Image (cartoon, rainbow, N blue to C red; front, side, top):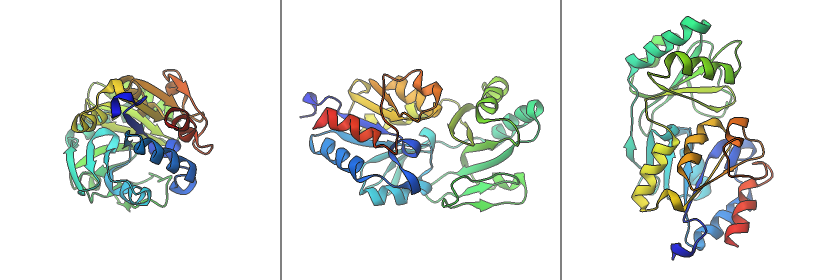
Length: 268
């Protein structure tokens, strides 16, 4: 059935891509995804958010498939409520990487996503969560961030913008960790080799679907590996210039139902 589809697998980022204001999915996008699924296509959410921060959104979507979370570190089976794959980050390595970055730019503000289905987001001194509705725990000292296994570290700098912080972090610590910009005020350190492409490839293998049958939607530099893996990459009009430069197609913004516009063309 799927052989006649334009794409058998639809991979969508969440923030700035599928989600509109207040973490909602528009009725039009919801309907377009339903039409694609009815035609036989599979939909996979691929997000930088860890499972605990995305579970409610998936429930509201009525989503029961696989979800790639934590920037590729987690593959989550929503129907069964369990992790199929999870990669932890070495906390000692994270501290070494932070030390190298701070030797270049001074103090950075840090947070971590803990590993697991119920892992918390811990924020160290100075770190500001730009999504105040997401669950988080403030800790008094940086060393408190390492109290339990983690899958990534989030960075902010009091003066440098996201692009410059990413550039410096890659230059001085890119041999130790994967550095990516996942959104505004969101520069992240992950274990080497972990990115959205790695997570998506693992999930697609479970579904027995190849990269050549995949269309991917995104808006930020952390989606670049996913676009490189997929057959067709669609950037939102609001996307970062780094992603726009490698996109096969540019659609309307997330607020203008950009995903729906493309899916309606392909599956209606």
